[in-house]
Image 1 (cartoon, helix red, strand yellow):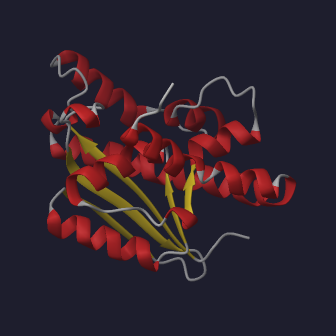
Image 2 (cartoon, rainbow, N blue to C red):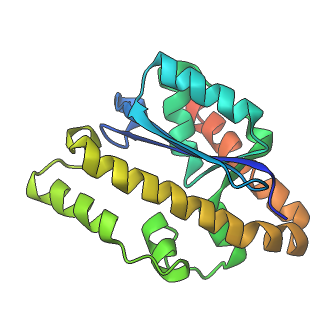
Length: 197
């Protein structure tokens, strides 16, 4: 059974190198009440106000979901000083690996194509624009309407993947599932502090 108050979130920004100065330019979330079906969507500039609202919504949620959540968590912490409520966080990338350790692709696009009958149209628009304008992964240069449609579809797909695997993993590998979902927090701390070899 799915938790009642669920929030998926994502960031879009200048690139993937958080420790080298890349920033979130947009924050997006999809909040769902699984009992009454109400939803709240947001896609807008990443600033102190939107970050504070996201933090408050995550605090009120039963679960917080992301795909490769560690990346977005690093941006939120470095840019806005926000720490995720890790005890309630779930990463659909890790869920996919737990559900099938031979999964051919752990990318959100790959999983969405395989399990959700997603046709990839929003991803193709982004890839074409990125390639045609030589943006090198800097999503802040993509027109907001194109990026918003892509990001909100990603959040819908992430929520569907969570719903697909949550009950299964909760009942078939309860303890391993609990441990694995805490890994992003541990790995992020290791990356921040460094490791003595």
